[in-house]
Amino acid sequence: MNSFGILNSVQHYVGKIRTMRNEVRTQRFMNSLPADIRKDIGWPDMYQGRGRIREV
Image (cartoon, rainbow, N blue to C red; front, side):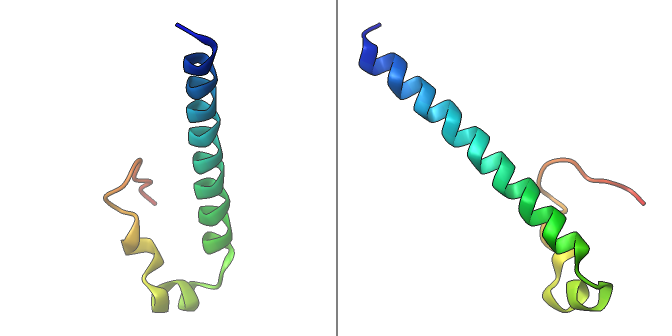
């Protein structure tokens, strides 16, 4: 494997980490909004099929 392949792999990994952090940050922000606003934009329903589902 040449140095470009390694660099490409590292960039891919960093990109995945950045994407996951952005998703977590967005979820925290959306969950901090008042319940009526979340309901108006459909936040709880939007991500039910994605990833882990937390039951309350």
